[in-house]
Image (spheres, rainbow over the protein chains, first blue to last red):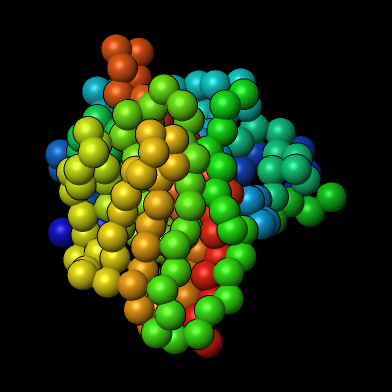
Length: 111
Length: 116
């Protein structure tokens, strides 16, 4: 079945770049997402990428997709303490339907 | 900005009791979902709902679970007889389905269910 894997923890200094990595198994994945979850809050969509793209940039966020290796990354430039949260990678193979999530990467930003 | 709202934010119940979790999706959305996250584990898909019927459900969504859209605005998840392992955060989500739909799911803040 589909599976999404992420590293569990990342610690960076304020002002540095953060790179969160994700791998997935479903070769028919069409949409790949990054969600952010702050303590006690819901899941906030940060960005998504279609599988026919290899890069998407949105302000401080850069998503890179290597479809051949089924590898997705999220780069956060100039990481701030407010970026501390859990970041979930997710994929779906259909139009906004069932999402398969990774376990989440805890990002800790040290000031 | 429109948002998905969920109630209650936290519910504590005894094993074997029925629980109803409520959600108000974004008003012009057509697709509705329930996901759950057991503490320390992945967010898991439970069920999707479209056009007043279940469009897909996972293995977790057994006969103890049901969903309903009783009045055109609320979307509910009922657990008929709760078990200890039902303790989790339950997230409701909705998505548009229209021409401009990007497939983005908008999530509520979750309802934490604790079964004792």
